[in-house]
Length: 77
Image (cartoon, rainbow, N blue to C red; front, side):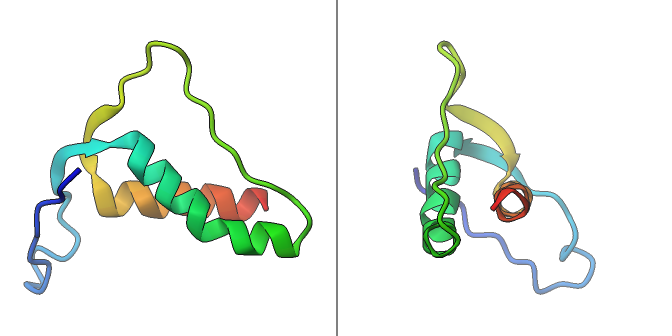
């Protein structure tokens, strides 16, 4: 899914949330792919499963969502 480019250089905008339509599957998949080498190094695997009927597209700030999921995954590893 194409991501909208957001300028966050302005100090007033740096911490502003930027809600947009994003693919939750893509975000989770990207985070898990990035975490896979660390997981393998520690002898664990990381997987994600979505409940049947879960929406794939959600409205969220992609940067913050990635950060939150990455933190959860890193803590789990």
